[in-house]
Image (cartoon, rainbow, N blue to C red; front, side, top):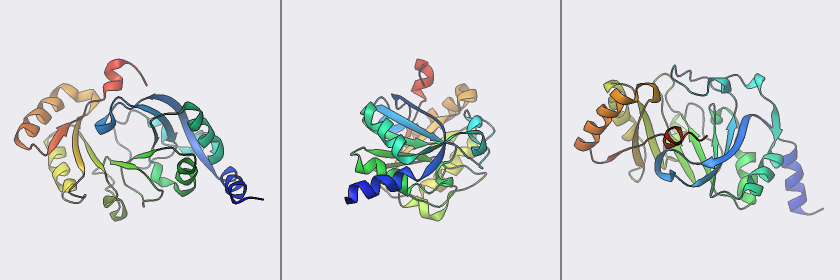
Length: 211
């Protein structure tokens, strides 16, 4: 039995609760517009009132799928990137899933609030921190992109606090909360004009009407 066979069998034995998988375009942040295969894991205890995927919060409501099957599905789509999102994906040990995806030659991205300890191996990490359940210290050093959702001016203060904790190379984005985007967008535009280290991120997939 080869090492590759043993490794594949090990991945077959690892299961994660999955809300959905789908192939689309990345709609937000630095990788907007690229072909992306999304793996949305179930389970979240952050509890954002404006969350647009509340159906993902309870992991018991979703089927568990094994890592090898998820990897094969992603590989067949041949995307530019594979995005592991949620829910809050760091509620799970992501080492088996990311190891499997990387072994298949896929570029792996993470979208997280950082509310749980860091696990997994990623090419890109997007941190979207929430005041209700702040990030774990283990997450900050891995962050490629900081994306703060803005509803009001308090979120801008929170954004600056979080920016001080990530690497200096981290790209910094402010994103209007979708349900209040007119008011929050105005706040962000004025803020970015005065703080050029920040950029505006839009949920382009929602404007386009795609997933």
